[in-house]
Amino acid sequence: MPRFHLTTFGCQMNAHDSERMRGLLVSLGYTEAPDRDAAELIVFNTCTIRGSADERFLGNLGEARRIKRERPDVVVAVGGCWAQSQKEMVFRDFPFVDLAFGPGEVSRLGELLARERIQAVGAFTFDGRFSGDLPSLRDRDHQAWVQISVGCNCVCSYCIVPQVRGRESSRDPEAILAEVASQAADGVVEVTLLGQNVNSYGRDLPADGRMRFAELLAAVAAVPGIDRVRYTSPHPKDIRGDVIEVHRDVPEVCEHIHLPAQSGSSRVLRAMRRTYDRGRYLDLVARIRDAVPDIALTTDLIVGFPGETDEDFRETLSLVEEVGFDGAYTFVYSPRPGTEAGESMDDDVSPETKSDRISALIDTVQATARERLARHVGRVTEVLVEGRSRTDESRWSGRTRHNVTANFSGIAQPGTLVPVLIETATSTTLAGHVAAVAAPAVVA
Ligand code: SAH
Ligand code: SF4
Ligand code: F3S
Image 1 (cartoon, protein in one colour):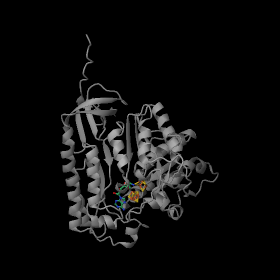
Image 2: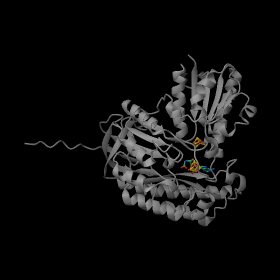
Image 3: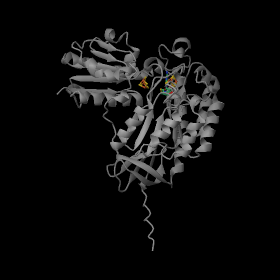
Image 4: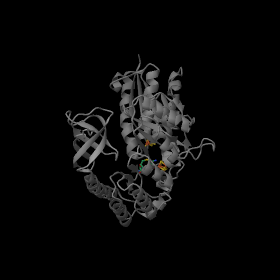
């Protein structure tokens, strides 16, 4: 049986596409190889969001070149966002690559592999099919990703995603609900709905049978067997009152929103074309907290965007403190080819300043997160058990509804929800033990 090796870079969309590739390859009779040297098919699912993502991938591709030299029969396939961005150049610059395909072509991987002469086959159209309709080999037994849309219609000036993932297209709600139902039947208890801008879900669907995002959330939560529903990412400009109400009213919808802010400075947000300013972002946070006071909010932040001054940067720091984020992903701005900022704005913040700002931001994010997570100490929190703790085999690990990793001792079983008494907290994790469950009252 031929063996494949798959390496995934990038975000959850890519991780999910890779589950599909794995499912597809196994259905074609491939088995998974432990490393590239043992594989007849080497696949990369690539990311190009920042220059550093390109570099990381190219380092790995160098190894594939070496293997191809030693074993010319090996097939090297490059899929995903970097491949899409390099569609004109990939076969010219990397002649040892046999097959390249964009993120819209995951469903055609089998067909592309079957071509008689694999040499230099490329596929880069968006065929409008959802990888979610393919067989999947899930990374985790009790949690699943569900793709609800592909592409993005936003024009954030720094971002390459719309170029490489195309226009936004929503998946049919019936197909989504059928997939969730079959996952639930397979033991899944937690689903995460995926899209670049989940909140605009449904706007492009035909009027009959259209569902808004809030309705979809509630419908997914109502699928028997599903205990927890999450989603990522919403764009702050598109979160409406109905979504906040679902968070308040539907118990399965978890108390966590990843709400990418990007910057705390209204001036920078305008240049980024985010279409909200600091004030509107804070208003949204206030409305969410009004409805669900204890909700966890996490975010994405960029430092060193063109023209960002010390004052702009201080506004990002103060936004972190004012909102009180439970966590944040922090990035140094990286100019991307073909984006508005990459093409027409001067990357004028020096590398030293970028590096100083990212360190200061990380410090503030950690201090704020530590303070926020401390509120869980002393509480009994529901944890979905994922498995043994990676650092201590005698303990368990799982996630809380607030999306924080919790490590704990006691009797537990993967895939179940257990009450955990939280004893300590860091800026990213909680620790405790299974809380004694009150004995049922005996009625005399
Ligand atoms: N669609 C999602 C995620 C997009 S990519 C969303 O809008 O929320 C994930 C994050 O990468 C973005 O939120 C942004 O913070 C960061 N990012 C995107 N382009 C970048 C660039 N050119 N330089 C640095 N960070 C970038
Ligand atoms: Fe990129 Fe903006 Fe779309 Fe997110 S919303 S994928 S940051 S263009
Ligand atoms: Fe994701 Fe990277 Fe593509 S962040 S959408 S894999 S460019």
